[in-house]
Length: 546
Image 1 (cartoon, rainbow, N blue to C red):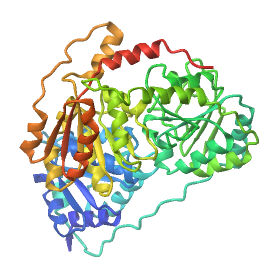
Image 2: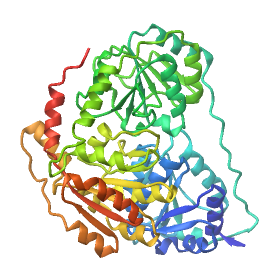
Image 3: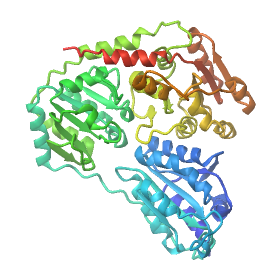
Image 4: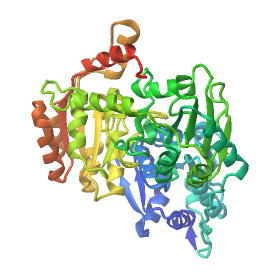
């Protein structure tokens, strides 16, 4: 005989789980004990929110569900922000929480909440283990749902008395099965090809689904065969190399950017793996006059600004290859003017010596230091807007931006998860001073597990993004100031390393040293966010090139 908790861990092993991020508690004691003899490594973190963010980034980078664990009550509620981020950003995550015994769940009781109902609105599937016998089915369903397109979060509540019950040791996990992705019907392939052939100025918008479905190579081939320029949402950065002549870079800034000029001109927009949560169609299709082709594995969301001319549902790579083979027209492309303008903006600040350092300069220097396969994790704040616009991303899953739920605090735990998944790559998180302090305690976690990450803090002692919005809307700001610790001393207090960049010329050598240190390093950079309003004014005065 074995305990239900031991069977549960066997089922997780069967799913290929190699790490669980979390915090032990009283109501998950049986699960923690079952992990003692497991091949699964338990990563003990300092806050459950960080555990959920780690599972989130692990799932997004690997395509396999990240797993996080908490105890009941406050432990479970602490998971919610990171879990919701994963679900809305379409990252596969399975979150597990201990729960009080079923004998006290019907009444007012210490730390008891209805966790299944609490997680249900923010998950693909939320359930509770009510008998040991159902564990193999429940775990298989959880991982199947979490990893199926569109991926997302699954929550499992595990009452402590059920976890301790005995079951036959011969009870086995279920066979892991993954269906082959279906191919789109031929009629839909032909329909899409005909719409593209009839277009004057078609434009591709690549979304997160391109990266989730490993369709980047097919996207590039499709664009090249038909000579159609492509923009990418924040969460699809790298799906087409920035250096590619048909790449327009990222779209999603809620202002009229250079990339938006391409959308203004387009008469057909080919949305590939596009999730509406990334960039709402009313922002790029306000007049509803364009023809839209939707290529993905899921039905298009219903929206007045997203009425389809053709919907192609099936394996994305297969659909792109077949449409390209069917389409007869090679288009003009004509991205040179837009591309030149974007490149000029990126290069204008490469040699800027101003201090505090301008965002454009920071990102230009960061790109020079980081390899094409290295990973940048963006936290959420004003810096995210600059990274999305200007960081030159060449490969998929090398610039992770949360832009569905868009929660602050993902940077440090996300970087830890990325480095654990890809230990041979350099991993950098760029975070604001506000976002950094939300989960900075995980520096200790990184040091304890010998996870070498570099944390670049854009330091302005303000909620910079909110100030940007306030000044843009009202012409003034309020209640956005705060004080910071000495980040170099803060790093030292953990046993990490810390550097303060004192001039623009120091940034590249400091970053190079930080990566060479092979430990947890904080790089404190004073940022000149006066560039935010300059950008707003520039975009407001923008006239699209012909």
